[in-house]
Length: 199
Image (cartoon, rainbow, N blue to C red; front, top):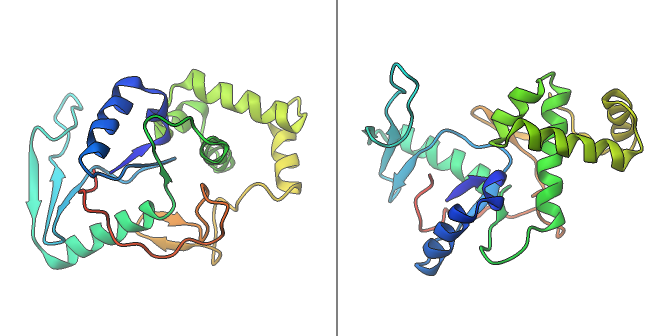
C-alpha cells in the first residue's frame, strides 16, 4: 500500500498501518500519488467509480477491469511509484529523508508555478502545513523571499528540473528519479510488487 507523506502525522492512520503490517502488509509513503486502485494477482484491476455530482470519492462503487493491457499498466505505474516511496514503520519516527522528500516535492511544485493551495492539495497536506514547510525552507537557505530561496536552492543543485527531458524515466502521468529520495544507498533495484494490493 502507498499513502501520501501527510498520513505520517495522523495517529488513526498509523494505527491502521500498524494493524496491516502485523498481517504481513508492506506500507510506504510518497509525496504524490496516482489515483486509488486495487490489483488482484495481476489479473484484475479495480478502480473507484467516477465522483458523484457533489464530488464524493471512495470505493463505495467500483469498476472491475480484466483487460491485460490495463492491468499491466496499473501494475507498472504502482511499481514505479513504490520504488521511489519511503517505507513506513508505524512506531518509528519520521526520518530526515522522508521530511526532505516532502519539502523537495513542495519546491518542485512551486517551481512549476502552482500556488500554495494547489501544492497543499496535491501533497495531501493543509495550506498551513505547506506554508510552514516553505518558511522552514526559506530559513534553512537564509532567504528573505521565496524567489531568493529558489535561487539559492538552484545554485546548490538541490532543485530538480520540474520539466525533465531525459534525466528521469517517465511512465503515464508521473516521473520517477533513478534514485529513491528516501535512500542513502544509491539507485534502487527493480522490486516485485508486494503481496498487498496497491490502494
